[in-house]
Length: 449
Image (cartoon, rainbow, N blue to C red; front, side, top):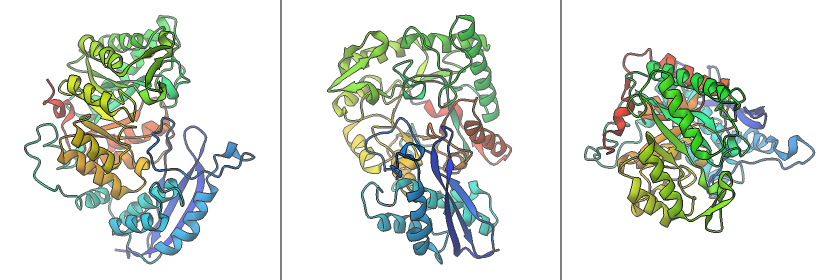
């Protein structure tokens, strides 16, 4: 076995699935191959996220270059890390946080910091001759619950053993993922009735194919896709997307609500302005929070919806409380922009009785340790964690290994038509061949009425 002492740290500028620059970091320990990680980037970003460092040079790549972040890794961060133990993840992440010295990682850049944080895991795996999923499991084992969570019926079986996730997959895209063709950002499916990950994914691909065929038959665009691979048709209303998804589930020979349920990513912060929600698809109609809740409740009554993400604005805490009171026992209510993988914001939600689920995005908070702390807080308080990709993704498969290692239960990657998405899904197919990894699927939602 090679030494786990860090010998080299190197970063470079590479490109994500939108053709935008991002940071790749390689770390090698004494006597072993380097471990590598690439940092994703979001389009639908919350204002409370950790900050990427971009160059701002209008004459190069429209100011989106990341050479400054790369330089920070190759100078200041490298000097601080060489000689340290790659297996001591918490110490590495704490060092990065202290080195940056800002509350939102804006000095060195959250993209620089996260690249290093994740590359350390891969470097440790190389040094110890283990798979990435095993190394992530070892790091997760350091985040034990503060108290027994057996009384929490929603999450009592999660976070305990290595488990393949229930996939939440984009079928039709709107909002910032597809040029604003629809107000709502994603219409997704969850194969809640599948008994294994391979079966779940096969159902997803089949439904996706039927969505495209039905859109084309109806005279809409059934080929071109958005940032995350979902179809991006210009439909006549936000609700029409639900009709197409239900029809596609049925065309695939599956039962809506029993075999396959629907998820929504409303991403409402992007059409919220001065206390009102403006829906362009209905003629710039301005709605109060209660009106949006009425709309969502009506849809839950009429469609097999089991999950709603960012149903209200990231600062509309009163509206979120009403939304949770009315729908929290019936569907998963995910906070993404609301919580931004930040344990302080999640704790506020827990204390306020707001939402019942949190999206887990590594680059929203900037280090692996902080991400796992938020995931642990969610599980300990009965909130479903949903490990998630970003709209600007890469061939990096970290989140596939991470969701299995933590047993978080759910993964949201995007659709099935772009290779940066399939890299994660195919990694899960490989991991599903390990008989020791379980699969809970839709059973995680048994507490919903």
